[in-house]
Image 1: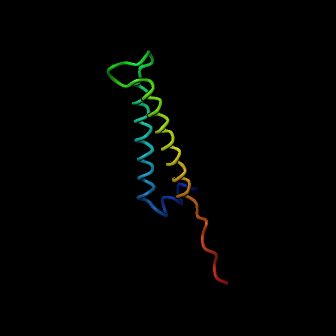
Image 2: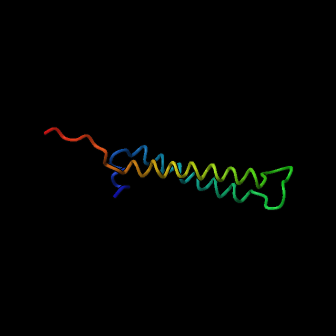
Image 3: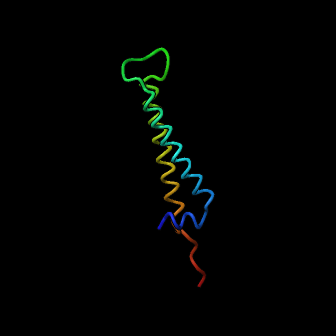
Length: 82
């Protein structure tokens, strides 16, 4: 139900978040694929830089998932006047 609510409330932001998550996952797979497992090379992406990059992308992914979850919620809403 959260996806339906998020799309009805703000379609542009929801699509932006979804595209951002897809881009982030593809980039994370690319970084993981390019990491060198043996030692620190002089050319290319080293294991240390790859791990730090993956940790940074994991943090951004967690923020995007939190944002997406908040888009679907209907509260807190102002209390009605009585």
